[in-house]
Length: 558
Image (cartoon, rainbow, N blue to C red; front, side, top):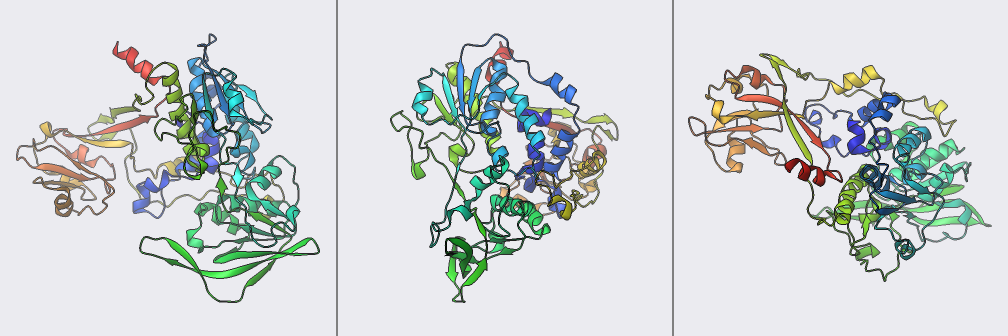
């Protein structure tokens, strides 16, 4: 439930997340790879007790508050808004042109990565709160929606338009040249069940990886991924590239598409120009032709996966809703409110294509704004997230959490054998960690959630903490500028992106304690060794800002 409170879709994200949190994991600074945070979320989701989860779901008021909200689009952002506002008594209608909720999680993430039953369960947790769903309903006019007397409208329609490639031959064989996201949707809803024996996938993002792996499961015998850039510049997640290569998909880099070759109405291949990448001082890339002969690749079908764009042809331009660059709505980045105060945006519809967890974050914040707006409050008066610190001390040398630090490599997630998985488009490839392996992987955590808290008034400057620290991250020194402090520490602090922990100068000698958080292991040895309890290990709990939280804070103050 901790997962569900903030992430909303732990089972989905535990399989498909882009993992923006893992680069920050400090285990990655001392070992090759960070803790498998994403896959541990799946362990929690897969091993939950469904009855316990049902019992812990928020209670929905039988008496509504009289305010109606329309959600346009049934993806992760809209579902998060519903998840946050339904417990507050709002009546919510959700419109989506697909036959079920989930948005691009349903139409663009293949079932071999995200089983349909996992998605259905997590969507239903929200819709079963009483959301009135209007599936198979395409909204073609925002003006019509506004005329239905909704008190607020949230737009979470994603980035539904895949980019095309207007080169020679593009229109000569339309049945065999597909827009990647549209093709994946057609496969997901079983409108397409096969593809040619030889397939080319254009693009280097996650959609391209999904297209090439799906093609293998629909009968393709040869699938080539072709990218304009060097492979190191590909936007796909490294693990998605690895999974595609594991299934035998080659990636051809530095090939720029020049022509679709069509003979007698039949697509027979593509021509590519070979290029090399050059970068200027700002890192901007230019693709320079090498002068080598063009390359011809045979194919029966092509999937174009070179990016996605937003599309708002259904939003009239006389609603007080301003549009700016790239024909995108002008949205406040903090409140997600448009220039029409009753209309809010989130997910890919707000600022362009991102990912599921970003859409969830947008949904939480948009729900806060909608609730504030409809209660006559300023949408800029935002409640703070919940922050709690709790001492982990149990005895003289005991902590509530496991503090021993060991060197341990990241555990590999088991996969179904390739030959078996390619026979069934619905078979999930990753098996996930079992509970035992999940526990072992979790033990790699360096306890970033347990903070070292220092009280100057108790310190006698005996330097016991300095002596015992295994990484030399603690120093007592004269105060100075940050630049000089970093150089004068026991071990110089070179990571400028990581703030230093600096005490006040109220120590007996008027020096300051400086701790380099970049290399601290949160092992607790400093607190164990300290004779005066000047150091303590306190668990930090962060709870995401939610709609209705400001009312709770006001009530508590009263």
